[in-house]
Amino acid sequence: MPEVCTTSPAARVVALRGASSAALVALALVLGGCATEPAVLSYVPTGDPVVDGNARLALAPPQDKPLWECRVALEALRRGNWDEARAKLDAAILAQGGIMGPSADAARARSLFRRENTKLFVGEPYERVLVYFYRAILYWMDSEPDNARACYLTAQLLDGSAEGESYRSDWVLPDFLDALASARLKMDWADALLRAQQNSRGSTLPPLDPTANVLVFLEFGRGPRKYAGGEYGEMLFFQPGSALARTAVLRVGEQTWRLGAQDDVSFQATTRGGRVMDHILANKAVFKETTDFVGDAALIGAGISAYQPRRHRDDGLTAGLAAVGLLSKIASAATTPDADTRYWDNVPQALGFAALKLPPGEHQGTIEFRAADGHPVAVRPLTITVKPAPADTVVVLSELSP
Amino acid sequence: MTGALVWLAGCASSGVENAGGHPVVEMNADEKGFVQGTGIESQDLVSVSDKMARSILSVPQIAQAARPPVIVLDPVQNKTRFPINKDIFLTRLRTRLNTQAAGKVQFLARDRMEALQREREMKAAGQVTAASDPNVVEFKGADYFLTGALESISTRTSQGQSDYVLYSFQLIDARTSVIVWEDAAEIKKQGLEDAAYR
Image (cartoon, rainbow over all chains, first blue to last red; front, side, top):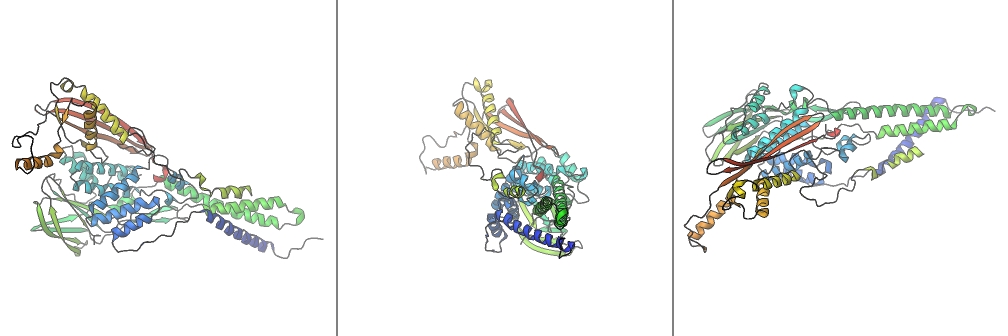
């Protein structure tokens, strides 16, 4: 007596896929149980970015600590908390120095089933450059222009791997400040100054004056953001930053200086070109897509095979196809091609510099940040305490300061 | 079934390298550790300062001096791309010379002059006791200046990063400005970051 089927083949396939989905969910739950869940930790926000940043740093997983160190350092720098900024930047630099050669977390980030953001955060080249740029400010403050210069040399080297030749080592201020430090140290400064002039892209460089005793560092706007694109979030993109202020006017006593930006951080973030990691993520995405497709095909095949009349049915083949389909779907679901979108979220959009000459002592003044059309967007009083020679006085003026 | 077991086994953390971390290991300062970069590291400091200490002691002006020459340390100039504590080279060089060739050279504590001057003034004012006449200047002048420079050439390509550092030191006659001794050491290191960071 022929076997009677009570449901249509298409419905049976759907039913089988439903069953496999349920199995998939069950397996995912089992697999999920293997993952180490981070303990739920919390902190009480105080509203002080340095205090809150340190609390977040204490709670952050090890791979995110350098990111929080960078964030806290910058907030501390803007508030004149030099020791805090110094300690955090040194820690971030140490983290950068430890990525040479094989490392377990980097290997995990490359693996199919771990996200890229499981690796230690050292940032994209523009973020690594900024760590050294800000650390150099503190070396100037400590009257160590040679160590400041060392930071600028490293910063330009870190930017040396951009894909396009014209974008390699093309930051303006690291070269300009390298020239200034070299002039101070009675070393050859001409090449560095020439590079800064060649890369200035229309911005105005201040005069190179080795006798200037007040070094003013300016920050405009908020820097670029990272986001993931592509079908599986495997592509890293940058949302350029923005700055309300384009110029600044510094008034100290009877003197007035009109100051502008020399470096565009978003430009640096978006001209780096492709990463080696992008190819790895693209391969992960292909693997995810392929295993998903194979899984679908195998499960459908298993469904069709299962509902063949008994005399034509091969149970071994059905089970094999179902197993292949299930494993393929699990592999696809477990593959994580997501690009690492952690980013240093308090960097400015633009950086400026000016070198002034002021007599030792306390000076009252104002800093006025101006929009492109010239109207002021922020005006703040300031006090500059100029140290006696030969020490440098360093002033950090930021549109992002409180 | 076997496949599922293989998948499940993938969850075990035994495949993670250094899952338990590294215990603290005490090492000699001249040993290469498992944490390495292409920058200036302790083994470089040790090997360079040891070499320089041996070299200085062979200079006739030191080895055959009628009385121990008096030396002042002048800070090393850092021309490399590595921000470092510059004093550490001369500090180690001084301690090597003081411990290995005790009495052959003398160093002046010029970095302590402020405290020394204050002590001398207190003695002159009678605020503290003095073993000799505090109004007579007894601070010594230098016969030689010991100084140096650290210079580097760095390259970074997709093939890796290379850093060459030249450590040069000089002994300069304080009276004539003649360089009576000079020696150098050079170290080159190369490395490549994991692809995940490139």
